[in-house]
Image (cartoon, rainbow, N blue to C red; front, top):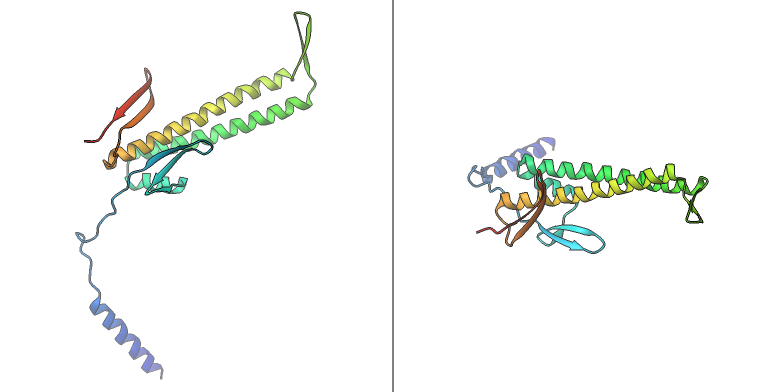
Length: 180
């Protein structure tokens, strides 16, 4: 009985290997990358769409890495690190703000008025951290957008005018491009 099953297994494996065809390297098609479109939403901010599907961060990273372009991946890495630093700064700012609520007030006497302010040695660094965190998050969005623009330019699939506002040594530069 066991010999029968072994014989059937060998015959099935042999028959299936006869019908299997080897794929030649020319027949293996690499998938063409699809363009990434940007969409601005009021509450969600900038969204990146590919084939009318919103891309998540890992999907966007996978698309960038599929090009083997070091600059696009570096821009995406910069975006992630800036976003992390921005959220840490905003969290520290919120912590300083809550701490300034429990500490005693400072009083400023100006023009005969007694103005009570939060504890300034805590409130001022908290405000500065909040502003710096906002700048980091803004820069993170700019870097991610630049990576997507680079992806579309390298795949030559941009189908409309693209606007790129990027920081340069001399200041901000606005570039417009249209593929021909």
